[in-house]
Image (cartoon, rainbow, N blue to C red; front, top):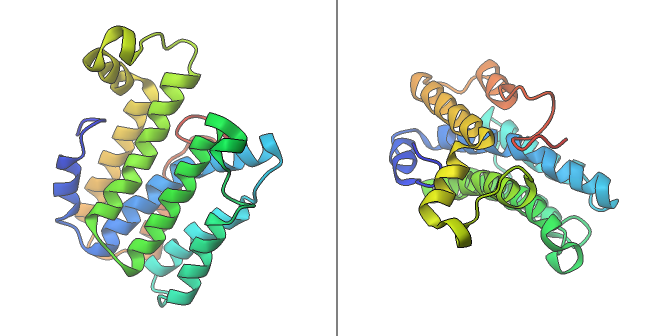
Length: 207
């Protein structure tokens, strides 16, 4: 798999049962969720428990909890409320990473009730877009730009950044494990939820 290419991943995910795909997306969400928490502390805005509870609902459904369509709608609406979702008009580019978190989690929860591989791929795109944004706009040591160096050099440099390498390795590991396991039991799901051991920080080292 290549950082900016999703066709291969989509083909591999389509071979998996629906809830295996959702579990893959939920693990992606875990790696970016701390970005929202960091934003809340920085700006004294939002509430980290809202996306946390929404993502926890996904893990509970994966463990066998009955799908409650009204609760899903309520959780998704909570994530989209004005006091939870930051507006880029108010916070500028700093809102971007938090918006990616909220969108990814809501799409993952939605996929529990309305599953499609396209939804799962969109979640992965949110996770990778967050890394691209962080590297290109916030890493002072990254001195390559699309405008000055061209698309090919820019995308290769992003794909070779340590954040991108770690993300791709974790995605590959999770995909392989999901291929090997038939039943999403409690122990496996807990491993999947916590297997990104980054001292409590996100895929871009925010906490």
